[in-house]
Length: 266
Length: 274
Image (cartoon, rainbow over all chains, first blue to last red):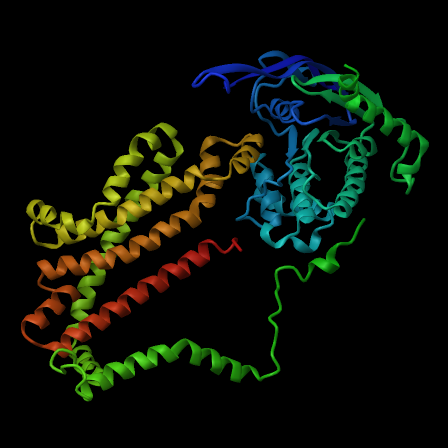
């Protein structure tokens, strides 16, 4: 069943014109984006910088509206922010004056969950991300990876159907990133959320996504959606050596690098 | 599940490099380092007049000043002036907070209000409050109202301007993150903007605390019947030089007290920061 549906979504902005002083010009960030995300699917979006990844995310959160087209969730058009979607940002966006627990409870409070239940729920999600013993730490007392775990727990705690992730592991070191990728897969299996994961890492996109949406830049459009025929990534410890992984990775790489080679011929 | 507890437990608990010496000795060394210059200063104050390096009529030895201070304390006179000063400054200071913080939050939140008002607020902030003292006395007379008002005036600007810039500089990502959770504007303000602004607001509050004393003492020197500023000029006119210095020392103590109180409050409210 379709969970999210992009229908010919275009977003234009007015930006400063660098050729004419004081003038503004129209800039098309994304154009005619069209694809669907299935219920419970893990889909990754990969593209070069300038492909409108952040614009897409803002549209999904409902903080901005498309210039043309529409985005549907469960058949209803997105008109504003809502707790049916949880967002995880690259820079964590944790409230520094709240402890790990307080940050998680913030979302629960936003949802109107009574105070007595908040604590228990926060405990559960702290445990889920492996931070049971860090509930009372402030963000500055946590490492980058731990902060991102708290952010994931915060977004999961108010029980959204869809988890939107904006390059969530890009600021982490390679080892922490790999650990969190595996954990995210585990959490996805356990919770059955629909996950839209934006990244610029090809390996990450192929490793996590059941499908990879390859975007092109200026303006952002969907180039191709690649199916990744890997069965269980968590069972196979060395999934990245799997021939299916390697060929999928090559396909995505080629799609992303095609423009350069075309340019080289001219 | 991956266990990450082990390496992380050490986080944020920087173990101080303990030297082999005993803790009581190192505490003594620290106390010595902190107080030695102070002790030398007092010694110089004591000895310079005693040895005739400075005229002792104009700078009595420290011991004499302390004796005068003690006598004033016992007689209750010092307390009377101290009380007058601290009540005025506290009243003006708290009034300023009550006005400037809410106003600053509102102005900071609306870009148009901010752009319109910041230049004139900067002008007021940079107008020495004391230059306006004659105006205050002309309009409000020489009583308590004019003194409290000038403290209020002097304290308002740093708090107001810091509050405005605090609200303006709240990390937009935090606002975006909260907005995405679909919280109301009021909650966004109360739960995100306000706590995020606290450290910067407190910088303004501390500036106001220093200003409150400065302005008040000067105002009391010009026209008052009680207060430390009045007491100092009164002592000077009556050639009670030791008493005059006793008054000055009291003002130093008052300043330290206020600064200590405000720093403690600041630490408490900003305890989530590094």
